[in-house]
Image (tube, rainbow, N blue to C red; front, side, top):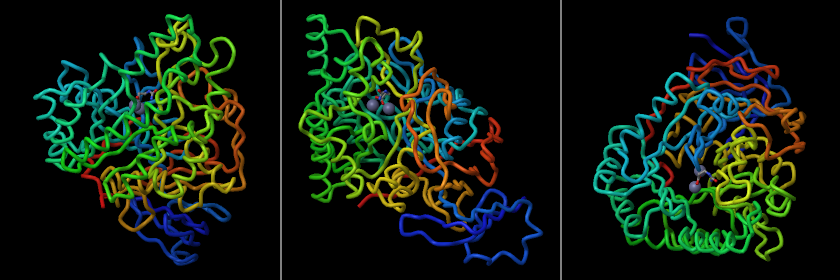
Length: 474
Ligand code: URP
Ligand code: ZN
Ligand code: ZN
């Protein structure tokens, strides 16, 4: 088994920053020691990575991606091959993608389809959540089966997208009761889709067809209301663990904070786009350009009095928000976003970002919004614990998979279509962002996949991870 030494770096975990050397034996971390501990045997190692002046952290874990998701008459433009390669470029060593079941479809067939898409294609390890877009008796049985036999222990429901993925309150309650019985996690897209569809129809009838109306027809109150309702339903369903995805709004976050204060197993994630981008800078651009940033929940206004970004950063520090994911769901501008020319409701929903989460969140460290430890906790360790992958993933410790990101805090990263950009899309949502810090070296299960500004991994290296139940419950 090849042995690799990462020496002279500072190892970051949620509990601190320590100078330490990391010894890797094959695919796993064999030992973590004080600097110089393994120096005697240095000539025997197959590879020595000098991390002097650099941070050594667990590879990033992005628990919210959508490779090849069918949406609005097209498919998310990253395949598992292109998307996991871009993830590796961004210091990510595990993704958890969403297998899809829609009304009338078979859950296990949906999961099999996702295995078919990913098998042999991935540069890094991957797991699946299961979208339940049609709650019926068969789907409920399958939830138990997937939890007990397939390593798929979390299920996403939608309070938005009526007629497509939407579940009504009764269906949500039933799915939650099932999850409570088998210990699974319910992930919720919390927006009141019935009310949103009325506002969308009214806007279109007025002739308000530009991308900005995607944002104004999805007010934060309707995210907060749905979040509240999901929390109540989760309680009635026997206190099933609830994880609200892609949280964008201060008023929704207040609902999470109140439930957590009450001691409930209620969690939420946010994404870099909600922390760094506003409606005014993006959706509201003249003409159709705003389509690039159409996603749901929408990017929020900095002028609606809610101070969304300030609250989200604060929520991250206070563990009201436990995780940062990307909700990576890329569509090209040409031919894909353009499906909504003249009608914002037909713009495929999603933003690509799997490559930039570690970079954009490190910028939060640089600007003093987050500690180094919390950066690692929200982007690496808690995602692993929340979704049953710990301590195999999410920590630099003996016995863990050797998924490692060596980070250069003295470097700089310029994001943009002609700069750092490896996702399969024809624009960058973060065009022109220049952030401090840089991905230096990335190892996936002991194999170097990024080194010297080059991708040296291979498709098919990534393995499917059978996940356990959440390890983050109170
Ligand atoms: O706009 C988004 N978020 N697209 C992906 C699907 C979802 O709801 O997460
Ligand atoms: Zn969603
Ligand atoms: Zn999503």
